[in-house]
Image 1 (cartoon, one colour):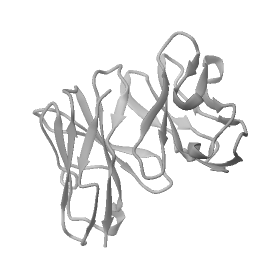
Image 2: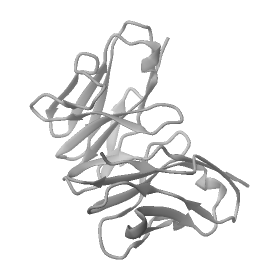
Image 3: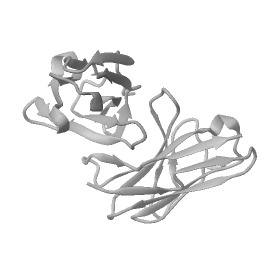
Image 4: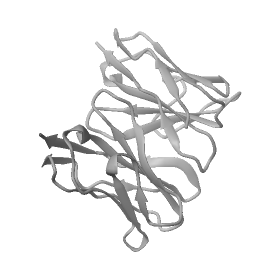
Length: 113
Length: 114
């Protein structure tokens, strides 16, 4: 079965710091990769996704993620975080014949102003 | 993208009662799903809601506890039956237009069972 690991469960940063959240998955075949964000009191929103093509994907609000197939990774990055980026971030993967995403445990990001 | 609404947004219920959560999508979608999200944890898929037939449940979830209906391509309900405090959670509806498309989520229903 597919599994998704988010190694950072809680991250605390100051504004303007750089962010990188790790995501690793277990399946070795063709995958689709997603990052979702859940702001406090709001519902899950798609931040960015990778289906094919350029492995560096740019999403909303200045976020980007890089698909590194050899490392089974899809890490999320932002060069300079803002207080408004405080949220829960979930990595998700589909593949192996399943179109239903497997979600990671989530990373709670707190950005101090 | 699909816009998904859920009702109720939150409820507080007594042990032993049942609650039905409604999910409405603004466009016809192939697939609808129900998830549970417990505090500090990831999303757990409960079942896939199939239009016109019985839902497909994941391991650990059964129809008697979580009956699901999907009468058409834009609407589904999830009932949490004979509730206990362990059922306190956020229940999320999601939809996906095709097998290769992105999954979109509703705002969730926050359920507290006393």
